[in-house]
Structures are given as C-alpha cells and as structure tokens.
Amino acid sequence: MLRRLTGRIRTKRAAEANTEPTDEPLVDNHPGTAVASSAQDHASDTGQAADGERPGDTSADTRTETHGAALDYESAASADDAVPHTTRTTTGLRSAIIASILVVAVLGGLIGYLGYRSYETRLAAQQRELFLQTARQAAVNLTTISYTHADQDVARILDSATGSFSDTFRDRAQSFIDVVKKAQSESEGTVTAAGLESIDADRAQVIVALSVKISNAGVPEQQPRGWRMRLNVQKVGDTAKVSDVQFVA
Image (cartoon, rainbow, N blue to C red):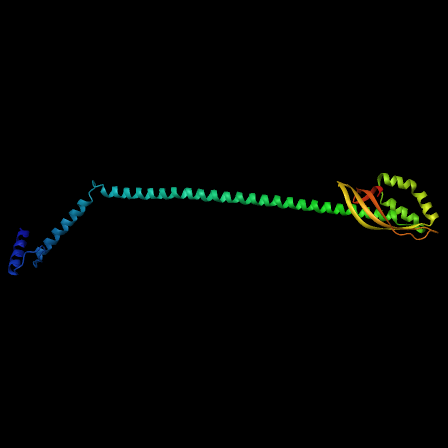
C-alpha cells in the first residue's frame, strides 16, 4: 500500500511539471515513511547479500581453487624451465675447466720437452767443445818439446793420454827423452785448424792441423812444417783424454 501511495504522488508531481515520470524515488518527508522505506531497503540488501553467500554456493571456492592451481602450474613451469638452464650452465663450466686443464697439460709438456731438448743441445755442444779443446791441447803437447825440460813435457803428454796410447807412449817415454836431450832438440807447434771428423756418444775423432817449427844443435834453422794429426778422444769422467794418435798426409 505504501508503494502504491508513493507511485501516485510521483505521477501527480510529474504531471504538474509537464514531465515524464522518472525512476528516481521521491523523498518522503514523513518520518515514518522514510524509516520504513530505509528499513525495507536494508532488509532487501541484507537478503540479497545473504543469498549471495549461501552455504550451497561453491562458485567462490571453485574460483579460488582454480586460481591456486594456475599459480602452482606457473611455478612448476618456471622451475622446469630453470632446470635445463642450470644444467647447461654446469655442463659449460665443466667443459671449460676440462679444456683449461688440457691446455695447461699440453703447454707444460711442450715446455718440458723444449727445455729438455735445449738441455740436450747445450750438453752436446759442450761435449763437442771439450773434444776439440782436448785434441788441440794434445797436439800442441806432442809437438812442443824442449831438451831443457823434456821430462816435464813428456809428463804433460802422459797426463792427457789414456788407453793404448798412454800405455805405448809410457813404455817409450824415457828413450824419447834421451833422444831429445842428446840432440838438444826444440820444437814448437801451433794449431792452425781443428775439426770433428766423427762423434759417437763419449768418443770422437778430431783432425788437427799444425804448423811446427823444429831446431836441433848444429843444424841450420828450418822452415815451419805443416802437420796433420788424427786424434781419438775419449771422455773420462768430467774430462777427456787422447786414446790414439795418427799422423795423416
């Protein structure tokens, strides 16, 4: 009844204003009417809210579960995407470490090999020089003898000799000294050239060329003579000695 009364009042006022009725509700200045209308509207809203939250309505729960499942799926997908990336990173790091180790090993081996080859080359050069120097000095000792100190000269020859040459020369040393002293002989040899003819481990053959000047008592001074010797040199400990001597043309 209250609604019908409100509608009539609205229609009357619209007719007076020459306008069409609007849906806007009129404000009832009557205290009782306003309170009743407010109470009714509040009850209607409360009922609608209550109807929207009925225990039997599962739409809100369904939406919540769906949203949670979506989040779980996205999280799982992100985790699955992260696993291959981590695996690739670990594999790449391991490959880099292995490659670095191999490079270091190869470089270390190469440096060691080059160092060893350098050591061998240096050792071989030192040994060649030792053979050459021994042969030169032995040739000078054999051709530089004076009757005034023949004993010392022969002793020097024996000190640089070894093997069969040492034995043979030692057996003839005294007779050789006697001949030099009797003839009052003096000789002086100078090396003009020397070279390795062959080398085999701790042995070598050296050709030495000399210019030898000889003088004897009562004999006119002679011109220097050119001699060539083949000396077999053998390493003995840290030194080298002559094991054989041959005069060559």
